[in-house]
Length: 343
Ligand code: TYM
Image (cartoon, rainbow, N blue to C red):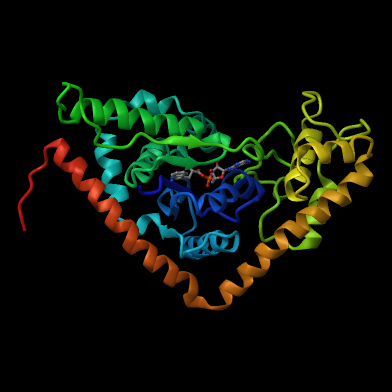
């Protein structure tokens, strides 16, 4: 029996933060033994908002290096760059032609990003979830480990596969029902860390696009900066840290971070900090964060010292990804009735 397949990715837009790590990449690392894992750097998604061409290649390389530094092992996982496997753009076009426009207009992230951009909104931003569906469906992924904010995009990918491709174009089986052309993926969302909130507002998500850098801790922030950001993080006037009080989103978020980053878990963290003031808690959280990130930062520095190391991983990843993706694309092309000329 072959292992179930996993695919996921992160955009190379600026430095990855604690939300990306705790909500997604941490889970990827765990899945490597039990699953056939594919992880891509989604650079085509990164240009759906205005981007700096002078930074794209370096951000792509450093994102891949961070995957490895976080524990993605190229011996067990296929690590590659989305734009280097052309099947992603091709399948996205085929899926575009069967996806209703109003499914995309409904997407929460599109609406949020579109409001921020005014008349700069591109077709690419609207089409972003279709490209994401192509990323996933090309690899026949069984599971897609992501943070909470990607749930709606995954439902869209499932609907496109099931209702718009399989139901319409699947050849009829013996029972008269259409057979699957594309595998319908399941989201895999962790219970803890799936929604890391901003340090400056416990009711909004930690995000790469927040103009206030103090709102997030990036995986490459030096210890002094981490300590400074946590010191300045928003608090409330109540003594004692606790989970689940809707009046205290900052307490919930920072205690949640402490529980994961210190390795103590929620129960032990909650009882340790139940009577603690913010002044005592914050240095503890800062230390746990610095210590949790230390090995990631060390490994990242090592990897970047050898300029060819990450490129070699990406070159090998591209070969394997291209093979799998190409086979799926052919399946869809045939199902849609394109002319096939034998070689
Ligand atoms: P991106 O680059 O915005 O985020 C990458 C991953 O990090 C998760 N995440 C968070 N998790 C918890 N708390 C947060 N504050 C937080 N912020 C981000 C995201 O849920 C995501 O898992 N569309 C995707 C990239 C993508 C993709 C794919 C993912 C493209 N193709 C195919 C899976 C499969 C995105 O924007 O991720």
